[in-house]
Image (cartoon, rainbow, N blue to C red; front, side):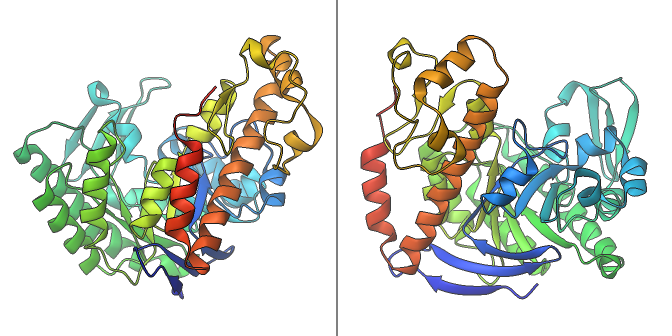
Amino acid sequence: MNFKILKNCSSSSARVTEFDLPHGKISTPVFMPVGTNGSVKAVKHKTLSNSGVNLILGNTYHLYLRPGAEIIKKAGGLHKFISWDHNILTDSGGFQIFSLAPFRKIKKEGIYFRSHIDGSYHTLTPENVVDLQKTFRSDVLMPLDVCTPPEITWKKAYSAMKTTHDWALKSRDHWLGCRDEWGGNLFGIVQGNFFKDLRKESAEYISSLDFPGIAIGGLSVGESFDVFQEHLSETASVIDKNKPHYLMGIGTPEYILEAVENGIDMFDCVYPTRIARNGTLFTWNGKISIKKEIFADDFNPVEKKCRCFTCTNYSRAFLRHLFKTNEILGPMLATEHNLYFIKEFVDKIKESILTDTFNDFKKTFSGDYENKHS
């Protein structure tokens, strides 16, 4: 995968890296917009591409159930099916199945579950999850793992971790036998719940399997920010430094800064697009809820310094009007702004690492952003 570290921060683990994927080079830190069903909600792929996004996320569980692997295969792969010329990372679907607790059983060979769509029965194994993502022609694919909720016992966390490790090995071996067919890269996933000894063991084991990249799972699942910081720091310090590091499921500025400071290169979350569809927008001075009455006659853009299509063409007053009248254009414009903001935010982080001013950037941004929401 030709992974390179271009710059290390002198006072933290923050770094700038790059690596090659089948559909183009990735420069990190990088935020991946989430397109669960092959589409990032409320925004066109051309808009994403024009803003510099070249890596989005899809979900194996959802795509497997609908439209199904056969349809995607007939289309020539996921890229052709969704008309996206850049890179795609597909999650394994383990987290989605985890959320279906009443409808699934975890066994040694895989996960048995009922579809949330029609109640039909299905099985995912470490091997067929790799095969599904091979059908999709994913640029980065994820192995099947066992996600666990906070506050379970050490014994249950240990059992889930061991199953994750067994599946990681099976996934890796199966991937090694077929990777040359399309060039996709399998990342390993660290688990261990909120037990330091298990996280360390998992980080060491997954690193030993020599995946092209390493993902950290099981964080940002409802724990406090302090607990998140503690376990992220300890986990990230153990994983192989000469691989891309992917922290799964984070997308707020505060969490992104913490991730980057701990050497994380890649992150994803539905948060920026989800809050946009509900009328909440990012600004450099905190989030704003555009539906509020105070914006009824505010003819400024969402963010004066922002060069996104939304901010260069529309006012806060018009956006509020769109949301109050339930016009579909409102969520679309809000989504475009939020994704542009996060992309610019991450680009500024990258610039601060290259100029070795990351700590100053983090301190200044946090002071301007925290507790300034309207």
